[in-house]
Image 1 (tube, one colour):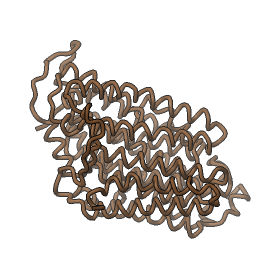
Image 2 (image 1 turned 180 degrees about the vertical axis):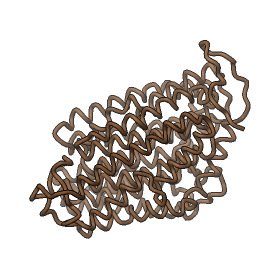
Image 3 (image 1 turned 30 degrees about the horizontal axis):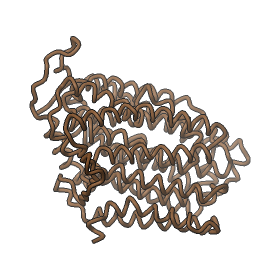
Amino acid sequence: MLMSHLLSLQIFLPLLGVLGIIALPKMSDCSARWVALGASLLTFAASVVMMCGYNGSNPAYQFVEKGAWFPSLDIGYHLGVDGISVYFVLLSTFLTPICIISCWHAIEKRVKEFLVAFLILETFMVGTFCALDAILFYVFFEGVLIPMFIIIGVWGGARRVYASFKFFLYTLLGSVLMLVALMTLYFQTGTTDIPEMAAANIPFNMQIWLWLAFFASFAVKMPMWPVHTWLPDAHVEAPTAGSVILAGVLLKMGGYGFLRFSLPILPDASVYFADMVFVLSIIAIVYTALVALVQEDMKKLIAYSSVSHMGFVTLGIFTGTQQGVDGAMFQMLSHGIISAALFLCVGVVYDRLHTREIARYGGLVKNMPKYATVFMILMLGSVGLPGTSGFVGEFLTLMGSFQVNTYVAVFATTGVVFGAAYMLVLYRKVIFGEQKNADAAAMPDLTKAEFGYLVPLCLMVILFGVVPGLVMKDISPSVKKLLDRYHLPTEMPQDVAGVSVTQGVRHD
């Protein structure tokens, strides 16, 4: 019985923790933390059971649940996972208990409310990656905004209100256009079921406008240049746990949206706009890497590096090649682990010195050798050193882009060099050098709890870098099925607004 409703279990288990915290108003903050941690660990355990039962060689949706929601409108409660979504579910449930542990002592005001917001956020995240009905997807996709808005606005830094409103308005504006696109698709296809939408043939002229509406939402969520400016502000002001989930999971929803909607439902428009995406991706990779190079705030540097890394994701997705999309998927998962761990590392030193200014640190290798080792592994993973997960995603993405356009691949490769520059500079300034700040020199090394949640992340970075097949064997069949639909020959007009439709490359 539980196995047939495994996805619903993962979606609604966190809400049981919410009910437990709300139903007992006199519960102490410490007890509330244990309830939230227990609920998140049970959800993660359900995800592990899901992964054990997932058949990676079968590209079809698995653990499918389907029921009527609004029968008169043919809107259903339809859930399922494939190789494109299953690891995002696991990533969401894996990072949530780590976040709760990391903020155990860092959050001291309104602890219960913070934990409630975080558990609701987990429900929306898991629901987004499981939903196979477009309206259900939209509810979960937009629902994420509310708890994250509250987390930044209430428990953030000095400019938290500005950052939270900027985050909310940027993402909401694009999402309104996506809602219009979903309504149009419903009237065109007569269904809100995503697999059925993907099987329908949408007229090319309509695809163009629908693609732009979806792009407005997913590009902000990634975020792509030039609609990325909300991200550094949100990261700088968010509490550590908020930054971890924002970088680790929420940024991946844009890429997931492209793979779930843009490519399979609007394949011709995706080809048509591929060159535009390539240009924006290259600008994001190179420009934001250069901006990261001059940052003085550790969080802001890692935030700009996230925009640069997401540029590889959009580049890989719209190459329309097996290597490119595989690389984009792997890059999202790798970045979810590495960026989350890097923000946790920033949180470790921030909790001790209460500053993120790079210049205030230096020589931490002397008094924090464990921290220096962990930071080094994560830094090398972010750089894309061979043997780390960061290398696999970038390498596959660049291979896919070489097949489509050599110039695009060459420009994108320069981002790897700049990425190495800003991460190595950050590491040198923080870990090595002279200890000019006596307070930094007196900071204690990692506690057992910090060591306990950072080491598994480091091991995953190395494991997936050495044995990427552990993940790719489940991802590749579903990506191949997606691309088979993407490469189906269709009759397209030869010219729209004077531009040749065949300017994008479409491989058979």
